[in-house]
Image 1 (spheres, rainbow over the protein chains, first blue to last red):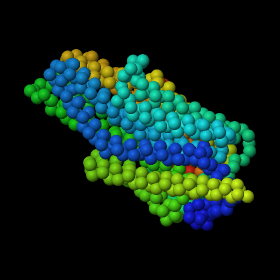
Image 2 (image 1 turned 180 degrees about the horizontal axis):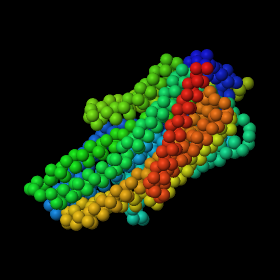
Image 3 (image 1 turned 180 degrees about the vertical axis):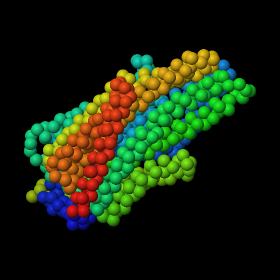
Image 4 (image 1 turned 90 degrees about the vertical axis):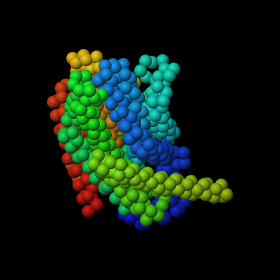
Length: 392
Length: 162
């Protein structure tokens, strides 16, 4: 069914009358659990994607260069019998890896919790809980979804300052507490889903689950294909590359250490160690781009599927809904393909990947604006209904 | 709401809770110590090399490789469980659009659930019960997942065509 047959300017036709408005408001109430999950989920996804884009542009490449320089310094220290300097170089590498790892973790967890919130919003009609309990669980989920990534992001800066533990700092403790909030919230929703299943009663029919507009169908079909492509790429990577790369990692590090310690000749970095250092850099880059392409194509597939469900809540003209759907899918394909091409085409491909990420962000921001317009209109209709009832 | 759809939704959310509980346990009790171990053994390998202690350097590198192998699979299990849980949940919401009968849908849901739970478990088992067994489970489960997702895509395409 086309959206035009069922909607007026993007708002379901049923909203145009007072009875329809009250039905829609009941399904998506102001400050309600479902609205909190949709808006919180979209905001988390958007914030996580922006963080990832900023990280990719400003931190990823300089950080990789610093890791390479520290590895060269460690190899030179081995050559010159300076064991303590080699240790210090690896301390520095540990810091650079922590800087990168915590930002990647903050980015991926923020996006993951955004997905989870949106999925729970989609499954909400099947959750048999009171609105108050659902709202508390939704607030817990969104709070944990903010606290965990913020804590993980801070790990590199806070370190072990004032920590009562030997290897876990306060930022990690805060992050873990955020994770626990999300676990509790999801366990609560799981209980509600289980109660609905045990009750044997049919679930309430729902606008989101009936979505059949052009934009919704294209997003759902595109999302399924993206996920399938990500699965196939992951299987190929695991079968062809993963084990070989793990062996190469160990072999190259062995060559670096051995060559620097034992090869004859006057150089600070012997030829064999230099070649191993170069090969190690290429290996790390190859591993990183393949993992990034695999995870991003599946993540974008999931967000396309979920965005497909939310089309009835996007209060935009049909033409704009279609445009944002196409832009989202175009960005979802561009980013992983360009990331894979980075090894061959360097910064040009990196720039194209960043454009792909920007397209996804723009499309989701457009859809989020549409959802906010929808909720605003819904509240206005509900307020008007309440005022007219008060007047009578 | 059909039984296979309910099963997929409950199994998906249960897997998400399991994945996050595992991630929480891992982050609190294992991850930081493992990262310290990986970094320490790699630094030790180069420090031993600087002192021309070849055997100790090799032993440290072997320790580093083993610790990194285990860490990679522990983190992969967590992230794949979580990712697959979300795919089960989103497919549950779409399940009514599959152009298959309830019997085929039930079978497809069973295969998807087996794959989603089994694939990361196989990855994790590589650390504990031998590389071959774990890898075998992971390969079979991931193959089933790919076939099942292909069937799901076909089911959606047939629904749209009809």
